[in-house]
Length: 77
Image (cartoon, rainbow, N blue to C red):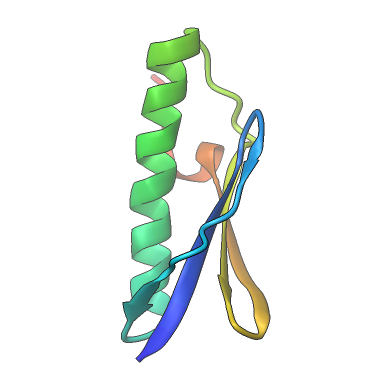
């Protein structure tokens, strides 16, 4: 298992210091999508708007592996 880290880039940058052990990158992307949806909803609740370019960046010990923008996981309509 690999430890993946989910860094949040919204109005400020929050680094995931603990990470989560997951089977593979696909599993990490699913966790990242859920986190991006959650953070997008929190942004709307707290601020009344969504900045679609805010994102979750998935990394492992070797570096950045994937980026999930809020706009990629939230539809408005």
